[in-house]
Image (cartoon, rainbow, N blue to C red; front, side):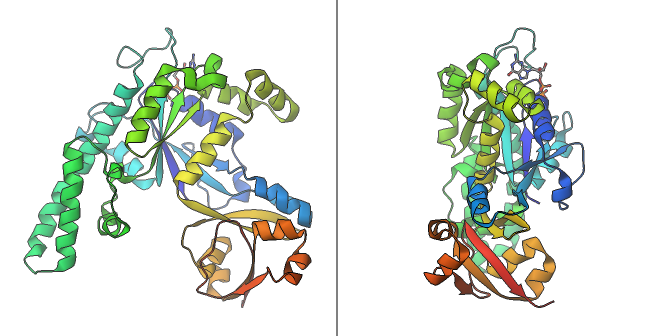
Length: 365
Ligand code: GDP
């Protein structure tokens, strides 16, 4: 399963946010691929299109797609040199597909700040520096190894070294690797290094309860937005404390509480959607009377691999897929109407699945 890791300095609200996530979290019974681990929370991805499809097929149940949030506690200054949980912490980050970096934007005299005052940019830089230092190590070692192979005159190795040098320069200037506009080809060349600063990042700006409705008035949030823009990262303002309270409520109570706060949607919903987008994922749907369900794939996946997300048998025995786009289906009003209009297509093994495709697979068992 895809994973987003939650990182941040101590006392910024990580645990509070993570607890809200696990409280609100999905039953992992629906998601057998998800890990059962106290540091892992399964979240369902809100998607209006599920309701749209349910109107058409009136299924017994609706199952959203899900991914995992991992609580990566323990980063402190010096982690890259083995301080605190050090290397263990960094190896956890290496395993995630995206990073949610929680930064403190709330003032509260009762809650100690590790560096003495609220300063989200300095907090971000402290953690980013540790990740950059770890990457410097990886890149330096790789360059050394690849240089030895250069003598063979392999063009690909030469390109690789060139790309590594580019990354190295950015890192030495305290810039994360993702701030470089590398081509897909260059990214591929350095992919197996699993650089920490290459991973997509989203900053969760933790604001106080009083500020949730107007979080962009908070000057710290504005600073985080400026900082994030410069390194191709996103920002989601959120109040971890409020989210923890919302997670305890259900139905009407929840709706009322959100209204009192002047919110349309819980911050967690926004955070989950933003993280899903950050992971670079597509959603396709299956729609039957039993269930309407969303499935997650990576961009560019072909029909058999997409079918394999449901079950490996579907991939192995794949024959073809009946496909209709979400808009085409809902505009037509029914599967039959879409078929009559010629909008239901038969696709084979080479079909690249699109976001919003409604799929029905034919396969041999
Ligand atoms: P962590 O060390 O990053 O996991 O931080 P915690 O989630 O344990 O939070 C540290 C302290 O800050 C706890 O006492 C929280 O209740 C408090 N806290 C977290 N978010 C907020 C917030 O939005 N406002 C206020 N006033 N306190 C918060």
